[in-house]
Image 1 (cartoon, rainbow over the protein chains, first blue to last red):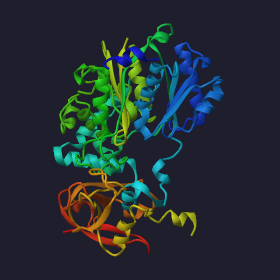
Image 2 (tube, one colour; image 1 turned 180 degrees about the vertical axis):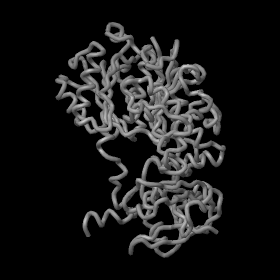
Image 3 (tube, rainbow over the protein chains, first blue to last red; image 1 turned 90 degrees about the vertical axis):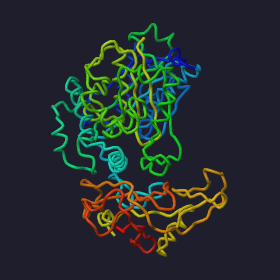
Image 4 (cartoon, each protein chain N blue to C red; image 1 turned 120 degrees about the horizontal axis):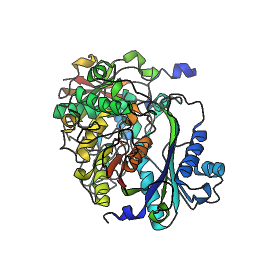
Amino acid sequence: MARELWRKAAIVGIAQSGFSKNIGRSERSLAVEVVRNALAEAGLAPEDVDGLVRFDLETTTEAEIARNLGIPNLRFFAEVGYGGGGGCATLSLAAMAVESGRAEVVVCWRARNRGSGGRPWAGTRMEVGGDQQWYIPWGLVRPVDQIAMLAARHMHEFGTTSEQFGAVAVAFRKHAQRNPHAMMRDPMTIEDHQNSRMISEPLRKFDCCLETDGALAVVVTTPERARNLKQRPVAILGAAQGMGPDHVVMANYHKERFLETPSLFAAREVYAQAGVEPDDIDCAQWYDAFTPLVILSLEEYGFCKPGEGGPFSENGRLEWPDGALPSNTSGGGLSEAYVHGFNLILEGVRQMRGTSTCQVEDAELCLVTSGGGVPTSAAILART
Amino acid sequence: MSISEAALLPPVPVPDEVSRPFWDGCRRKELLMQRCASCQRYRFHPREMCPHCRSMAAEWRPVSGRGLIFSKVVCHPPVLPAFQDRVPYAVVLVELEEDPNLRLVGNVLDVPPDRVRIGSPVHVAFQEISEEITLPQWRLA
């Protein structure tokens, strides 16, 4: 099993739009452009594409992509559910498809006008059924509220502090300052973080990701095909999903281990697939819709013990170039752009190509994670 | 009722086949939790099958309504228009004494958010929000 996907799937092209609060174009227009550009970057043509994978909340369909690009036939197309949890799962599906021969060139993409398009929670229905009937009526409406419930308990059990959440935001902002495409490039200090207003106590404004219009795409193919293309291939060493027991999406409060998230299960699977351990990872791109998700992930992906994610994030450990685990080296969702975590995948690819604006020296393995608090996924990318 | 007036009403739960006994109980000011009729283990959210013994036989048991605040957030703007006049407001997770895995989302009535603390004992109170729906809420014990 170990290193199976290493031999069987590679990322050969990437593309992204600009990132802004209001990009002034439709999601579909952005989607078709980044898919076209990712193929061109790879040295492939739309005629080469036989697979497409998208994930939850994507408004552009496979048919629309294919019709715009003139793709003659798709023999593989799929969509992964659960919001931002589906990001790295698109790589998993694409890798399985090219590995099994069900497709040879698969494009995964995300286009989302979350900056200009309004906040999804603002459209909460006035009558709530299903799982929502158990938390929305009491005013636990916004994703930040739902994650703050985990953060507050983590602080209570382990003494985690707001300043430790701040250390995550400050580290990622430092990286964004070197990235010309990042939306937030002003310096940020822990004091700035502490002075930012409360949104859902204990979480402040600077614990929350950006609201971004933008789109990104990656092209996945077989190692054989990858060898003769324009870019140095990046291997998908592992790409896995996880859910864990008794899961409730976002308000995941009713299982025996309260602070355990689906990440723990995706972590086990992705390391097993790749045949590597946390110690082998050179840099990480954490799903950072909210800072406490990074702290929980540091624990669940095995970089520290349960409860120690807060102290781990301090003293520059997440900072490039000298930290033990340079993380979100493009600025992440907190400071580069929030495109449902898909920009984290592209930064992972750049690290493995050696082209990041915060390039980790001699980096060979990068961990990329997807949505926290929802059924999730993760990938381990490798330099070739 | 105009659309703008409707936006000022808080979202109300819509009971379904599985959850209806819970909401019917609240309307009678009784807190009921779903339990497996075969292995007698509680479960929440309510569902069709017992995840432990896979029985589909369920019963609704009255519980004490006593618990501890397990976690807490305080919501500040921006919030839904329906919650605007409450900000800042606390939302808690209450762990029921019958089983630590029974955790209910709620509000603590009649105290400011800073008096709501993790670990504090609470007891259930019922808040009628419409003819059909009464919410379980909490008071400091």
